[in-house]
Amino acid sequence: MLPSADALAASRLSLSVDGPVATITLNAPDRRNSQVPSMWHSLAAIGAALDDEIRVVVLRGAGSCFSAGLDLGLLSPEGVPGEEHMLGLMNAADQTIIDTIDGYQQGFTWLTDPRFISIAEVHGYAIGAGFQLALACDLRVVAEDAWFCMKEPALGLVPDLAGTKPLVDLVGYSRALEICATARQVSAPEAADLGIATAVVPVAELQATTDDLVQALLANNAGAVRETTALLQSARVEDLDTQRLAERTAQARRFRALAAGG
Image 1 (cartoon, rainbow, N blue to C red):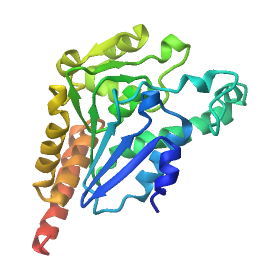
Image 2: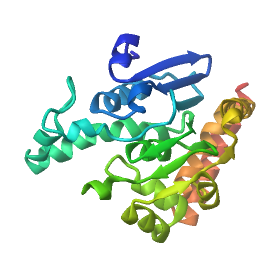
Image 3: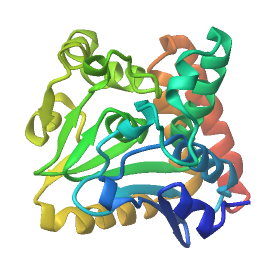
């Protein structure tokens, strides 16, 4: 079951579902859509509850930016009311830390489910956890004013929200290391050059470009798109013979589905 609107609002999110498209909005513009544990748990709950009718998931940020990253109040002695206390977690046993962060990561990893294609619509800042949330998506439509930054090393931390693998997959080890170890900002044009951005467009055209991409993704056979998505994901890790077998096996399923009218 999808989280209630009130529960989502409490975790700085909103959700709308329009036929095969689910749109998740990071909805704390007064805090630049900074992220907290309840947001990650709610994202994971959304992912677990979406049914097979959903073919595209869009993530966007309300207000001036996509997400300025971790709410730094979590690292203060006072913490953030209603949220898990990060300073307390820092003093926990190693296994407790590892298990807790695994729960946080579930809010990101579901976005690679091949049942649907996920799109991050990025404007303004995508910093730290915001950058990792954009990287968790399959595609990124980026406004010209966007800036990406893996800020964690500047805070004495590491990127731990499942962002390191997609970054290396996209830009390679050497460039990923340089981006993370320097914690520098990556502009929208550079993001396009590096392959992080699927498209870079004027701010005024951002939503329309995303909408056009959604319609293009919906135009083709759902089963074929899902099988192709899974194949492209496996191609990043499998050897040629294993991948060829996966292609043949997927095509056999498509033949059966088409013969049955699907």
